[in-house]
Every structure is written in structure tokens, then in C-alpha cells.
Image (cartoon, rainbow, N blue to C red; front, side, top):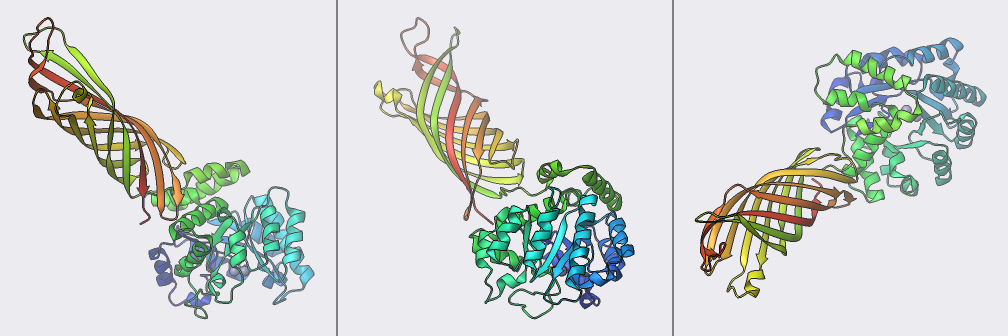
Length: 486
Ligand SMILES: [Zn+2]
Ligand SMILES: [Zn+2]
């Protein structure tokens, strides 16, 4: 979760700011963005963001303070927007509800800061209260393909939503969507999930059940759970989608990746480097940054699978008394079974599986009992591209094969193999977890062989003789795995 809009510099947090920040990170918040209101607060915010690498800021002048937007102060906004940790221009916009500054002045200051954002290649956090028409028409005029914006604390109509989306905008929701009388359900439902961000707008807008109290970033999950309910998605899904969107929008993916990879880097300098590379890059790099985000859109932990496929058994026979090695095979009889696996990290799964197969082919030739094979296998599965809807993998492992073989009588054999396979699987996100259909060609190469006494007619001999048998198995299997949400 990323709280994309929290005024944690507010004096309401002066007595317990660090505890409040700790509560947020303990609650699973990955990052907090503090928007600026006006010049008198700029330095205080900078001190807070420099205290923790997971806190970022916007730089800008709120419409309430449009009176303060002198040329000097606008120059300061532009200059300090180049500081490290500044990820947006904002919050800026229009507020015709409070009307603290004349409307034409608000419009001019808003437009001026949109120009700064475009020059500095930064996204914009937009405040809009009872000023839908003017906010949208100014964006329309300024949108030349370079403007990335989010309408924060979105509380407007579906029509405004559609216009904002068609202008390339993002939408951020806050605690007021949890209120009983909220009329925003339809708006939320019509907002594409990949355009949604979440925020608290702390210390205001506390979600139910804290409505009316001081709000803080640790409550941001209540906003996402309302969105999850309306979009009929899991909370995990909403949290990971909104985090991904926020990281791409504010370009904080690299920073978080560096932080979470526990590399002991000088955070200050790595931030500076990242900001610079972000700046050097233009719009086309957004997709690259999405690939570098640490979270997998298909998160897995435990998985359970069912599988089946044709088993081919090849026996390589060495008759006692010498002679040429001979082979015979039984092709395509059915094997089926089950598997459980554990995802160690995105690229590696450990799996245990069991397959059963029965070969009736010798029965057709007069044997009294079929050959039966039990495969007990443990494998490591290496995934080449775990974040894609279709993933390719290779497996390596070992099996114990317990078999009952009819050689005039039933003999039991225990053999060991090493196994290897290649395959692919799909990732389908559902409300009850990830469903993953898979196909794999798996080969088991014998490590141990078995001595059989009276099965074979070797060479020119007409009577059965003892022989040593090495067995090789090939199973092309199809399966489906289920990775429940935890
Ligand atoms: Zn606002
Ligand atoms: Zn705000």
C-alpha cells in the first residue's frame, strides 16, 4: 500500500509523528507521499522526508494559498522541485468551496504550476473542490501529452471521471468513500482498476470507523478494502495494483526496490541517482519502470495441483551371460496424480508430487496382473519469467519409483531416478486465488536398476533367463494448480 496523499507534516502530528509513521509501516504501508500546501511548510516537509527513505513529497502551492504564489515563491517551487525526494508538483488546483483566494488568481497559479511540472517532467497532484469544469478545461488546454496528473480525493461525478480518464488522468480515493452516505460507489466501479490510487488525506477524511477523528496513513487499508468490495477483488489484489500504479506514476519503483533489497547503500545518494535517471528518461521509460517494481502481479505461496498425462516406460535389458543390451517400451498409458508446491521466491518453487500409473498392455498378452508404478518426486522448479501471464520453467529433481511388475509372478521393485522437465504455465487471477494451468514434459532417468529372474528371452535362447533392467520414464503431463490467497 502506498498512501499517496498524507499531510503528516501537519501540526496535529507534532507530538507523536514518529509513532504515527511507525504504525503506518507496521500496517503494511510501503511509502507515504506528503503534498505541499505553501512556502511556509516547505522546509518542515523536507526535514520529514529526509528522516525516512520511504517518505516522499510533492512541491507546490495549494489553491488556498494562491495569494502566496508570488513570482519568487513560484521560482522556489520550480527550483526545489529538483530536490531529491520530490516526486510530484502538488498539491495544486482549484477550490471554489472555500474560495480563500480569488478564482482568477487560483486559475493562473494552477496553470503556472502545470507548466513547471511539464518543464521538470514531474507528475501533478490536483486538488479540485467544486471546480470541476475549470480544472478540466485548464487540463484540456495544457495537455500536450506531457501532463501526468492525479485527481486526488476524487469526489466528483461519473462524467468528470470519464473526462479525466480520457485526458490521461489517474484517480485517487480517500476515506470519504467509506462513509455511509457516500455516492461514489458508481464512480469507483467505473474507474479502471489500473487508474486507481489510494490515500488518506491525513489528518482529514478519516475512514469509517474513525470518521471525525484524526486520520493517519496506517488507516489507508480501509480505503483499499472499500475499493476491493466495490470492484469485487481481493484486498491483496487492490493493494498490489494500487501500489504498482503509484510507483509507476510517481516513479518511485527504483527507490523502493533499492530499499527493500536490503543493500546497504547510501540511501541519499541512490535517491539522487534515481531521480536523475528518472529525469533523463522521458515518457517511454514508464513501462521499464513497471518491470522493475518488486511486486509480482501473480503472488504465490502454497499451491496445489492435479495432473494427468501419458506415461511411456522404456526398459533397457541386459541379459545375464552377456550379449547385446536390448530395449522394449510401453507407450502412452495413463498416469495421474497430485502435487503441492511452495514458492520460495518468484523464480523458484519447491514441489512434491505423486503420480500413479497402471500398464495393462502385458495383461492383453496374457499376464495376470498389470504393471503398476508409483512415482514420488521432489523437484525444484525454476521460472524464467514469473511476472508474466504465461511463464516458462524448467524442473530438476529426484524420484523414487515403486513398481509392481508382472514377470510370471508379481515382483516389487524400488528404483531411484533423477528427473528433469521443461514446460509452461498460465497465471489466471481469480477472487479465490491464482489458477495456473500447466503443461510439462518430464523425463526420469534411472539411477538404479533391478534384477529380474525369468522375464526375458535373450538372443537365441528360448527359455527365460535372468536379466538386469534399467528403466527410463517419460511423462507428458497436463495439470492445473491452485494458489489460494493467504
Ligand atoms: Zn486536497
Ligand atoms: Zn491535501
